[in-house]
Length: 590
Image (cartoon, rainbow, N blue to C red; front, side, top):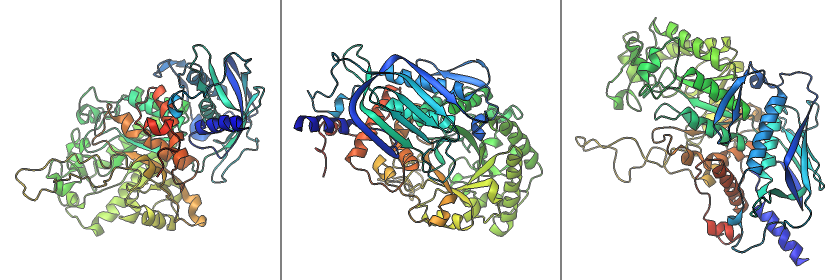
């Protein structure tokens, strides 16, 4: 009996699904995944387009190569079967060609693997039953498109039930996490959890990452790698902060000078093909990719190509902007509306084929800049407010004409008191604790996204981009050189964030979800992975499983397991825990 309990304890200590599913029952028998495992997909869908954005005129098929880089393989219609078969092939690659032997989770010399000389029981096929009528667990906050069940019997019969392909993508990611690689050469991959039953679905509909590509160069390949890690953690929204004062890295064919003059260099431009490939890669990993064009502030880079559209360009930034260089779109110029129309018609006609969202920005307007605007010549909030209202109305009208829901930062409601169409907009909060912002915005009846800079800003604690001015004895840049949102937000701090703790139940249906943010002042392609992972994974579990949980040792071990799996996929994720602590369970508690 003691030996059996010891084996079960070892099995329990290695259990490491991330994010944690709603319900998981498992035994302690071993099953092996056959190298010739087959997918059997049974679809009972009445429609071939059950997911809205997921099925919007997607034509191009992108499949991952052996090294994870996507490659275009031609044009054909994307079906549920195509999508699930692609996810199934990725799962096989992760499990059968993987090398995750979890040695560092056990004391040195421990015997934690099944014997290889006994008869093996294999999973020979995986049946996916896709039916919108499947009785799947759901939170009731949104539809059941992402819900799934996994049922594996002790003799290797594997059944996955889903209501849509999105649930299938999540189920196959979970299925891959159930398997470990045996250390004996050619022994294969096994799960020690049979029989098992998983019921799972997300708490929040919008589970996102906001990634800034405008302040330092982030390549399309970097973003595709990030999408793959997001899919592994069941994140489903990638918010690309695509423009800012510093550079314009996005090709706009209708306005070619924007990127040619606004990017840092011709080599630091995303082409239209790059953006579409990223969106399609997101679709294959269950991640909706949408763009933010920050308007009307943070727009200095537009002035590099169209100087007559921008006011206060290249003025002292400490007075006319929060970051250099200064410059904002003019608010009352007759040249600005046709420019905005041309810009957004070009961009949104392309992105709306793969996304239902557009982010217009709307944060951190510098009122001083409008004293220099020849069409305004005032910094009065009373004078500026109707001009801001008219500008945002224009942007919303263009976006809704492309059938897009508009996201904007909280300032448009909290600072400018704009009147907005509730059905067409989502307000994104970010400042401070979020409590007051969320409460005020929800009280006005708007749908919201959370993601406080006090909890989910990944760049905090790394210092400023600002250098001390030797001619300024009162320079604020001084020891200990802290940035505005210090300290560093470690993964436990991010995991413990409960954004809806103070939200009454009557308003929680308006909380669509949240995003974790990586602003790019001190991030580029080289340190991107370490800035994101594993901390984004901590936020992912908050948004998938439930907010308000406190991290304990089991959380640490599960996240460390996910980190190892990300590393095996080529993600340069940071360390979760010291190896000694992982090898000696209970040894690092205090």
